[in-house]
Length: 254
Length: 249
Picture 1 (tube, chains in turn cyan, yellow):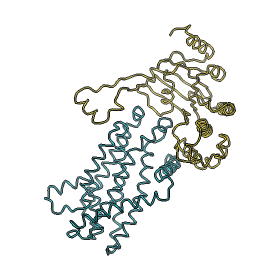
Picture 2: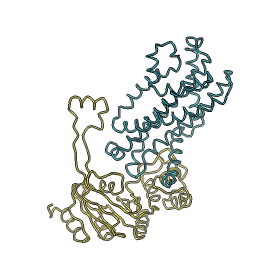
Picture 3: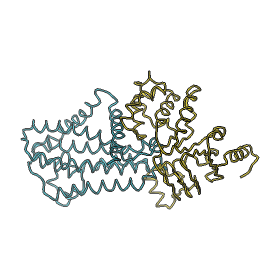
Picture 4: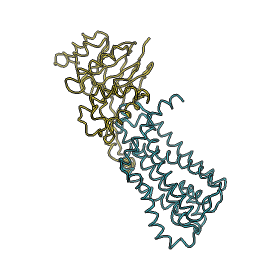
């Protein structure tokens, strides 16, 4: 507890720095981070609306659910990947807990996600969906997603120290995840065993949770909750393990 | 009671081309059994002990392993073998001019650095004026950090770091900072900290400085401990003779 208070100031200053770095103090900076996913969504809605819009109810919200969650995932993990490397000059000179660099990068991605989430709910409302108490359960997938992102960030930032080409490999990986998220289509018509493969993707599970609550007004079954918690625990645990194990080895590779 | 105990500390560095090859190449080389890393001992069997109030000077030519040893003492690195036992809070001031953010202002950087060094916000609020005054950067405080000259950067770094309060203080040639006028000021400040009673470790290339300030001395050469003791003048004489080529080790 005492240690936490000691690091609080450090953490706040790091968050401030990352935030300023990201938006470069421009007025449009913040706005752009909302505009760009919105524009992307417009494009997707225009193109795929004609293909899938007729068979999927509330297609705009369906699409936006996928888009907003997937975007948060990529933004947070891509930012996180650099967290250790870009602070190498600091942690080779001063003894500081290295995970703080990653956590602070995640905060700005989370703030961004929060803002886009507000826009998302405006769209939900415009689409004629009524808000019910069940919306409160969305906190659950969000919390799980935060831990999944932190875990991925920890693993990636550590890997990036050892292997510089992770950046390119991860870009490829993200593409696969993107198509495996069923952002703009539905997996209902796929055979069961292929549908099962989709559930190996934590981001897809998150999106499914969102769609189920927002569009169908149903809280998913217990096994989906368990699956999501499982992903969060495994990924975050693996991330912590990597940091613990290599804490003093990063130094040799930067 | 000893405040710092360094027992048989050895530190192994790995070198080789692993840094630039990336994951794909790494996997290929692993499969071909062609992956090699070279080991190299930056420190080998270093042993010494310091009491409260001691002032240790570490001397040695470039590549003697001085900075590596300091990193192990300050806890940034863990020794590959042996152990370091310390009592109380430790602060290491190693080449501090790097690690600032170019786009943040001078003031923001000062706060960030203070936070990283473990100061509290309250402490920074109270001492910020003093820091900026000492660094003579008042008129630059809202400028982006990248606009400063390198001398100004190290002046700021020194001013923040010199407020540190610790039981063990490590100084890696930070005494020589800035231009003539500032150097005098910083040396005076340093002396003030040292006489404050903390146990201090000083790495220096200036034998004059070591002779006049230190009561213990450690001589390293290519990672090995050549000598350690409290006979500062004798060891300095030996080191000087070695530098002049009169003494072989």
